[in-house]
Each structure stands twice: as structure tokens, then as C-alpha cells.
Image 1 (tube, rainbow, N blue to C red):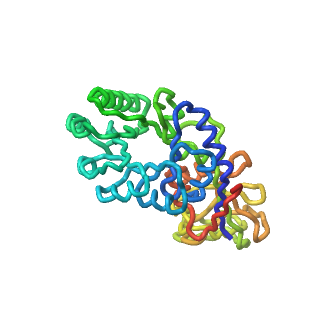
Image 2: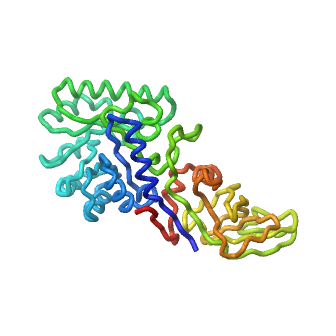
Length: 352
């Protein structure tokens, strides 16, 4: 009745395109948050079979779950507590170090990446702490140095890049050895070739989705997720029929309404307004408030068969609505849409 289709061949193809585009830089494929809703283990296995350079996750628990499932590729995580470090070393997990408390807890078996806050204001060592950081890094082995951009504008991105370069140069001149710099995620990797360094981190692009809200994706990436439900009810109603809670929508003429068993329990945004779904080759608007288990479409007098597929989002190339469009309808972005999708929906993996 509800399915989330994930095309693993598309993910492998997207990754190879990113590798070819950004070479000679390595490409870390980010699979945090259940691989942006696509299924962390299944995606990691598909990427490992494609020779992934490294996998990125947010925390040690995600990384360990991959290791316990047999994933042998490099894994890097960056949201940690000092108490996580011994466990990370035991499972050969590389960690991002962002505080002096973490740095003090690092063991000789930890593989570490130093995180610098170059302006995003989240994790990482502040610019004011750089002298102390350089001093405390003396004699330590470091795999990489990294930061993360705010994606505010090209001007702001380049200010952050300059701060990153200056900090890296200071660390290098102090005699601290490292092999990788990584600053760019999907948006900056695509936008600025001079941000690639030795490695880039790609998340949303691996899944064939755009990191941009203001322009088209310039690479021929393929969306890997389609979300489909079955039409479970079709009925004729008169003008003046209120639809769903609060009567946010009232029919202005006789019409037919269709019921789709996919609600905010499955990640369909409750505040979505104006999204269209595809039924039997035709787009129809979602009307009224999305409920926990279902939503209603105005079929404009059409009467598709009960059991017909309803494509909630999928592939623009097939004329299907997109995750970007569902995000726009709910004042959100494609990242949030795909990451939250699931609930009772059955995940179906294609091209294993």
C-alpha cells in the first residue's frame, strides 16, 4: 500500500560521476541519518561494491552499526564525546576532533581529523584557539583537517575558505603532518573546483538530488528514491464539501476526491500546500490538511481505479513530482523530505 523505492544502481552511478568530476580529489560519500532516508546499510554496501573512498556518518553509533554489518571501507564520523574515542579506535573509525576535551582523550590508536570552525558557528576549534591547538597537536599524528561551509553566498564561502587556508598553513608551518584537507560538501564541490583539496564530502548529490535552492543541478545525477502509495478510495462529492481537518479546503463545484494512505506518520509534511501527485499519468493536487495516515487529492471529476499507483515524488524525467517540489510546498528542502520519509512504508531496493 505504501513503498519507498531506492535505486542502488543510480546511487552507484551518481557516486562514479562525482568521482570522475572531482578527480583527483577523493569523494567521501555521506551516509548519515540512514543515508538521507535511503537506508544506510544497503547504500553503504552498494557504495563499497563501487570502491568508495570513504563513508561519512555523524556519530560513532552509526559507524559501529556499519562495522557490525560487515562494512570494511573507511568510515569517518564527526559528532563525538571523549568517551567515544576508545570505541572508535577499536572499530577502526576515524573521528573529527572539535574540542580540547576530545583532543586530550585521543589515544595512540585513534585516527583523527581536526575540525576548524571557519565561520559556520557550529562544531570545531575557534580561530581564537588556533595557537593553543597548534601547540597541543605537536607530536601527534593527524589524518586530516576539515571545516564546513555556511552556503550563504559565494562571498561568504570564499571568506571561510581563506580562513581555512590560513589556519591549515599555520598548522603545517608548526610541523604538524596531515594527508587530507576537506572543506566542500555537495554544493561547494559542484560550484568551486578550487575547494576540492584532497577530498570532498558528498551527501545529497550521491542520492541524485540538488543541494541548490536557487538553480538547477549542473551534473546528470539520477534521483534514487521514488515514493508510491495506492489509491484506496474514490468518491463523488458536491460543491461545498469540506476536506480533512479544519476544512482548509472546500470544494467549489462537484468533483471526485481520492484518498491516499500516506500521512505525516510516513513523513508527508503536514503543512504541505499545493503539492501535486501523479496518478495514471496525470497530476492532481493534494487538498486539505495532511493527516497522520492519509491525504486527499482532488481528482477533478476523474475516476481512476482503486489500487492505482500514486507517485508522491520520484523522477522528473518521467514527469513525476519531485522531492524538491514537495519540499517547496512545505517551506522545506529536499534533504528534510527524503530523510524523514518512511514510517510504515515498505522500502524496496532495486538493482542490489
